[in-house]
Length: 410
Ligand SMILES: Cc1ncc(COP(=O)(O)O)c(C=O)c1O
Image 1 (cartoon, protein in one colour):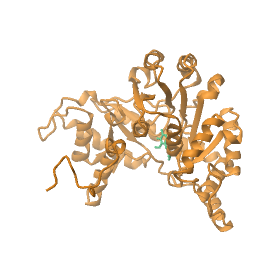
Image 2 (cartoon, protein in one colour):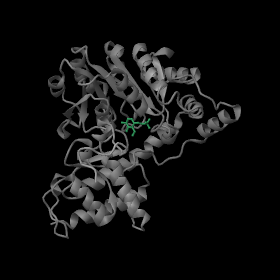
Image 3 (tube, protein in one colour):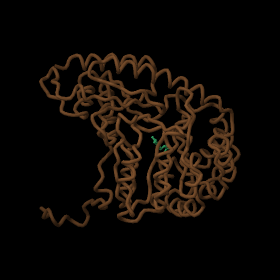
Image 4 (cartoon, helix red, strand yellow):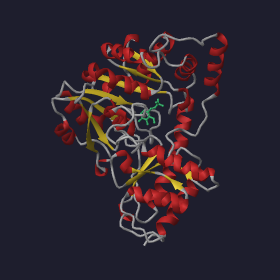
């Protein structure tokens, strides 16, 4: 038998940077729930980060046409000229932001945009401020690249938004980036221009800090709130802001894998270097589809947003009716982030004590077959995230089950 400290040369050994990461807790919960479902369990999975709608027909038709036309080859490295022009027009139309084509990049999903930007800029030890609760990929990408995530809690009392004083304290000479995400996955919190103002004022005083504005959920914003993007609110920050967006959530195109960004030309160029050695270019057919999404009829956005808002309202009131749970009303995205402090310390019918939000989520899955994600997976406890991008009937059933499970605690 090989000595434990000297494994055989053929034995698999992950790189240090990847070995340090685990499989995302969200994926683990999803996999466990899916397995229970496969075995015949009556399971409701409220973990998915994607709209339940289908991609609109005109977008599919544009993709089919592109295929028939022979748009089946490599494209320009970081996006076709036609798609870049459409993205520039989108930034102008929706955000009042002017970007030239050399200030625009297109990637295989917004996730690749973020990865490219961080890969192109982070050196070991560089710090990235991540407001918490965060989308898990921010943390993992920064860690893979040898950066240092600096987590700044966004308290519930502050609507899960960043307190400017907390931000000020977190900034050091080594801070390279801050990642702002409004509306947020997982909290659903969004910033109006006024709410962004004090945060951006802090950033104005620290020129070494670049701003990654993840505007992915721009079009899923409720109650008539006007969307605000950092470079639009404070034009003086535009020269160090990467405005990230994509078609995944807005147009129900998660599988097409197209994300994009506008930012300073030097950064965009460095990101293209990264892309050139990973995916070469985004899918030609998906780019044609994204072009149609951004230039075609936009009425689908408001329609779908209304449908999400109905579901939000039902889930928030359903959760608040359950003793022990409280839920703020999120301004956007399709997630609720409910507080479960009231059930911590209680005992399940099997005699187990619920010690934290992870245990609560495990209990919900085991006892009533509802899969949700603990807040601790997003860096803030004790909470749990529900993705309500599913049917009203399923949501109603899930809320009834959660209510039953909570009532059974003593
Ligand atoms: C906040 C946020 N940003 C970016 C993304 C990435 O989206 P995509 O890579 O599908 O474009 C997601 C997806 O879940 C997200 O929730």
